[in-house]
Image 1 (cartoon, helix red, strand yellow):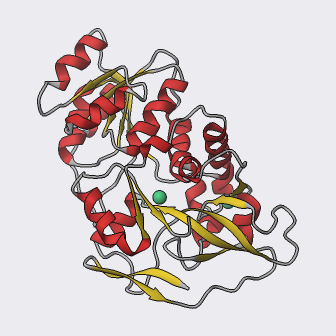
Image 2 (cartoon, rainbow, N blue to C red; image 1 turned 90 degrees about the vertical axis):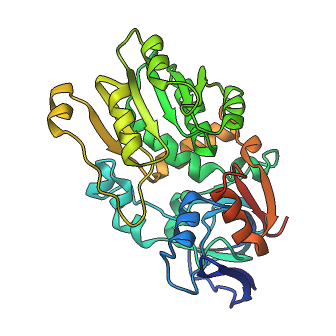
Length: 341
Ligand SMILES: [Zn+2]
Ligand SMILES: [Zn+2]
């Protein structure tokens, strides 16, 4: 079968590799499409995985082979599946730290979503695979996993109706957050230095949008919050300037949520006494849970969250690097690779 194989940040190319075989309880999925995630882009640009790796994990496709004993799916059925499956029973899962679950960390799709076929392990079949209703397009439901990561971040944020939330970064993830925050009855201020993203964000429910490189964000936040500062900040980028700005814009007792890290590491400075005296919380989230995946699937299936308009580019799998470069240059909002349309 064909797969797009990573060798370096300048070399990801199509190769013939063996089609995976499956065992009891597993599925062989014929991949229809795979989304390009920010983590794929990072792993390629920072060359953070070994040469020969097949990346990609936002997959949809049809069941090609059923493993022995699988009764919850049938051949030809359209399926969306996540790459990691938390057990929902261990200490970490019970405490909500699903990404630290040993089953979560040991499960993955093989060889990876940038391929014609993938083996779906038994825990993923059991916990994080969903049959797609006939009337729901792949281009909508492929957002199940990225949306689930945002759903879990919102669960961990504990918003109140009427809260004012500043979302930093109005790319595809920022637009998913915008819709989730609105569903909680909170208000959204959307910030992005790319003006064309801001108009688009209004269409997804952002109450106020601002380009912080053109207009002072501080003034807008002060006006919108009677001088208090925003209740919560969700940032899709992590840097010292963003942290400094977030600390100046969040209200006393508020929360800064980083839905982003910095591959390779980034030491930032912050005044621990300021955090202490202002009781400002800092939290991070990077992944989903089975519960968040079920909720994300439902939100998309029932039309509560709009996703299909987020895809800006459809490409063949042979153009993985081109898709990565377009995302890095901010020329694409979301890249969708058509594998077997
Ligand atoms: Zn991802
Ligand atoms: Zn667990």
